[in-house]
Structures are given as C-alpha cells and as structure tokens.
Picture 1 (cartoon, rainbow, N blue to C red):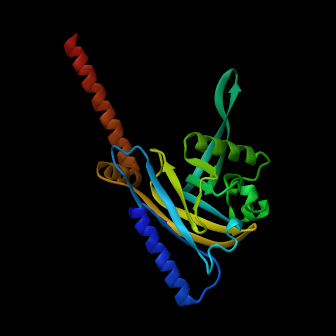
Picture 2: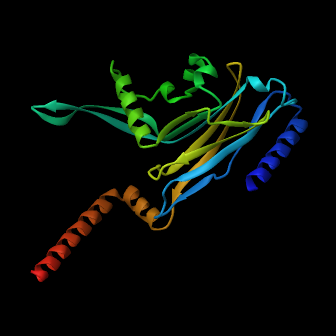
Picture 3: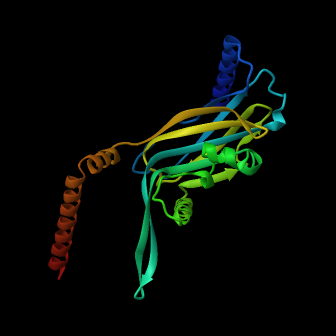
Amino acid sequence: MKRVLALCALLLSAAAAAQDSGKTEEALVVALTQDVIHITSNFTGAEFVVYGTIEAPDAFVGADERDIVIIVRGPASATTVRKRGRVSGIWLNTDSVTFEGVPGFYFLASTRPLDGIAAPAVLKRKGIGLANQDWAGPKRRDLGEFQKALIRSRTADRLFAEEEGAVEMNGASLFQTRVVMPANVPVGDYRVEAYLFRNGQEISAYSATLVIDKLGIERTLYNFATRSSLFYAMAAILVAVLMGLGAAFVFRERD
C-alpha cells in the first residue's frame, strides 16, 4: 500500500512538472522504497525496490519501443587481484594487478538483454554492464584476464549481479525491480541510476543516492578501525593475548 501511494505521488508530481515546464519529451521519475540502510549486529542483507514512471505526453505511444536499465553501484575503491601459481610444487601468489575505482557492489537490471537494448558502442560509452566497465589499471596485455577474474570473484560473493529481464513494466509507463544485497555489502554512498532507451538510443536518465551505514557498536568499532588503525591493531593484539592467557590459566587450573 505504501508503495502504491508513493507511486501515485510520483505520477502526480510528474504530471505537474510536465504541465508547468511545458516539456514534451519522455523523462524518468524514479524512487526507492529505502534510501538509507542500517547495518546492525543481526544484519543478514537488505532488499529494496526501485520503481518509477515514464513521463510522456502520451504514455501509450511507442510503449513497445521503450527499455529500462537500472544500475546500483558503489562505493568505489582500489582493488588488488592476485594470480596464484605453482612454485617448486607450492601454490603461491605469483602476480597481481590493482584496479582503481572498482565498486564494492554492482547490480544491473533491465527489461531485456542488453545487446537488444543498445549497440555495444553505446553500452561501452555509458559503462552499462559488467563487460563494459573500464577500471583503471596498469598497461599490460593480460589486464582483461585479471578484470574477468575480479568479476567472477565478486559475482560468486553476490556483490556483482546482472539480471536481464528483471525490470517489470506495469502498463505503458510504470516499472519496478527488486534489488537484493548480501550481508557482506560494504558501507558507504551508493548511486542508483535509471536509463530510458528507445530504439537503441538513450532518451532520459535519472540518478539517486542510497546510503548504507553502521549503527551501534558496529559503528563505533568501524570508526575506530578506520580512523585509528594503529591503535585498533594494538587493541586487537592485546585482546587476543589476554584471551590466550585466560584460556591457558583456565585449562591449567583444571589440570
């Protein structure tokens, strides 16, 4: 019911905006059921819905020619990918590549397969799809192999996902998709992007912000670990030593 009411409000605001501005082109109006997600001690993942409407003078004209692509990504950081090999019969890290600007989470949903929505050059230019990401890295011939390995690893951890056909169209102009985040999703600021395509051309785009943050003792420990990493490491070592001494004392008393 809340989602229905929110969508009705979106429709009313879109109609009012179109009437006031006199615009005639198609445009996206998008919202999220959650724009702030809190991580607590019992956090097992999150789920929210991205939904919206296509603002147009006549929503039914050319409705079959429209496609929607929704992307949720962030936060970006440097990521190192290591390659293992056998050295004298022992498996060791023999090579590594560091990529810059890799999102900790990447989710894509679309009305149908990407190759049917737009040309490869358009998708590459917009960075739509995991295969079209251009993360900065060292100049080397096998860079693509390391990037594919990174994508496979993040996909296995459910941090990267592409769900072609997961955007549901409700009528001529309403759409929605469900986004599922695993428990290991990183904290930070995320960007939710929506694209409207018609006959292979981008017609409109929309961007919103999603925040994932820690609460309670998790927030305190996170701040301590990131802002005072040296003291955090010393405290962790001290706690480990004390626990070891305590365990040794308990077992010695039993003997």
